Length: 120
Image (cartoon, rainbow, N blue to C red; front, side, top):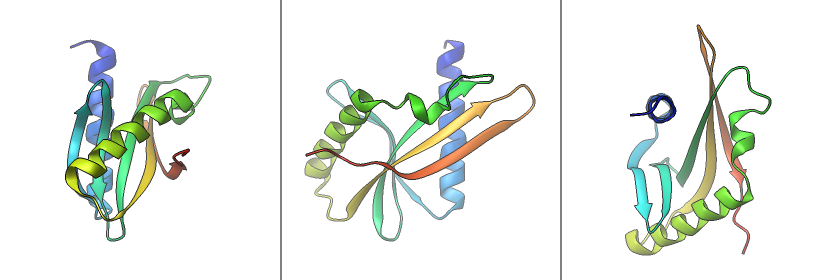
């Protein structure tokens, strides 16, 4: 496994633990449809959370969440639509990002709720 993949997996693990500790329930991890993927699909009392986990090594010019561009957002929304249909989801969806920045001796994790909205 490449360092980048290893870092991404570690960031997903950290995001998952963080969200589980907040009372979320894991529905899916690395859910794939066609060429699209959703990193985490989690459920809270009121929502199904579609979560993109993005990580970078410090120093970085942009925060990890700033790398989730419109193209990536559209891919996530497209995958989420398929998930809704296949799983017959009735709860409202929320699109969130977990941003993980790795420093030499520490990690900075930010959870951005309602990070983006689908464009219809």
